[in-house]
Image (cartoon, rainbow, N blue to C red; front, side):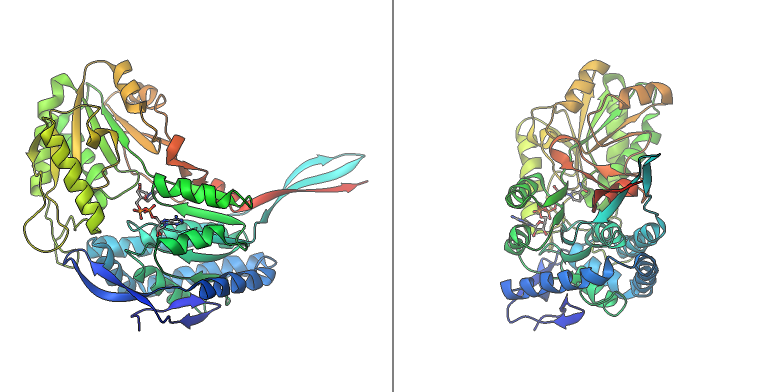
Length: 467
Ligand code: NAD
C-alpha cells in the first residue's frame, strides 16, 4: 500500500501497484506512490465529465469554493511543506512559501471576473462575445514546483468552469496527492481528480478521448510529444516548457550589487527553475569583478538537506538530472572552462552538487547552449551590445531574459530586443498571479496567469440576438 492515495470522484483510491519516491537529500526511497491503472484513469476522466455538468453552471459557487480551497491549503501548509521538501529537496521555508503561493493563486482567480464583451447593439442585433469553459482538462506538472505549478492550472481552469484530472511528476507525486486529499470535501466530487504514475500515464492522458484541453508544464522534448499526441482530436494545448534565460549586464552596473541579484536569479530552487538565469553575459571590463562576486556568493551558500535548519540550497531533485548537470559541467571543464568555485558533485549521500561558477567559456559550449537546470552558472564576456543581443537570441528557447544597468531606459531598450515571453530590467524571476507567463519559440505555446491564463481554459462564443 502506498503512503498516499489518489483522488478520483472525491474518493481516496489506492492501487495494487506502487512506485518508490526518493528523498534526493538521501538518495534513497522514503515512501511509495500509487501507480494509476488505465481503468482508474478512465474513472477519473469519467468523474470529471460528470462533475462538469453542474460545476460549469454555477459561477458564484466556483468562486466561493476556490476561496475555501485556498483556506484549506493554508491550514494544511504544515503537513504539505515537509512532504514537498522530502520528495523535492527544497528548504522547508521555501516549501511553505510554495504552499502559500498556491493558495494565493486560488485567491487571485477566485476574484478575477470574466468579462462579457458587447460587440454590437444597434437596430439589427445585440451581439456579445462570451467565454465558455472547454470541459475536462488534463493537467501535467514537473518536479521543480509541484504545488505552485499545479495551482497555476487548477485555479484558472476551475474558475472558468472546467473540471480536471491532474498528474504530478513521478519524482514528486506525494505533495500533489496530498493536495488532492486536502481538497476532497472542499470541492465537489470529481471537479479535481489527482492521479499518479510514470511518464506513460501522462501519455495516456494526452491521448485520452475525454479531455478537451491539455495544460502541460515540463521539458521541450516532452512538450513536443504532448502536442503531437493532442493533435489527432484537436485538443487545445498550453505548453509551458524549458528555458535558457540570458542575463545581460550593461557596462554601468555595480558588479557586487548586481552579482547578488544574479546569484538569486540563477540559484533559486538550486537552479531548477524554468525561468532561472542560465547564462550571464558581462562586458569584458567588468568580467573578473562579476565572476569574483558571483563566486563569493556561491561559496557562501549553505548547501544541505532541505529539512535542516539554515539550508539555502538543497540537492538536485533526481539522479538523471544530477548526472546531466555533472556531465554538462565536466564537458565545459574539458573544453577549457574554469570552475572558479564548485565544479563537481559533493561527497556523501544524496544528489548534492557544489554551487558552480564557470568562467572562460563562450557560446558553443553545451552548458551555455542547453538548459542545465541545476546549480551551475556559465559567465560569458562580450564586447558589443548588438553582438550580445544576437547571441542571447541565437537559441530555440525563449522563455525569459533580463538586462541589468543603472540607466534603466537604456537597459529597457536592450531588453525589448530579447526574443522571449518576459523581458525583465534589473529583475529576474519577478512572477505574479496577474502577470502572463509563457515562452516564445520552443519555450511554449500559450501563457499562464492573469486574465490571459484564464482565457486559455475557455473558448469564445458569439451570442447573437436579432432585433
Ligand atoms: P518532463 O518533461 O520530463 O516531465 C514533465 C511531466 O510530463 C511529468 O509529469 C512527466 O511524467 C510527464 N510526461 C513525461 N512524458 C510524457 C509524455 N510522453 N506525455 C505526457 N506527459 C509526459 O519535465 P521535468 O524534467 O519534470 O521538468 C523539468 C522541465 O520543465 C525543464 O525543462 C523546465 O524548464 C520545465 N519547466 C517549465 C516551466 C514553465 O512554466 N515554462 C516551469 C517549470 C518547469
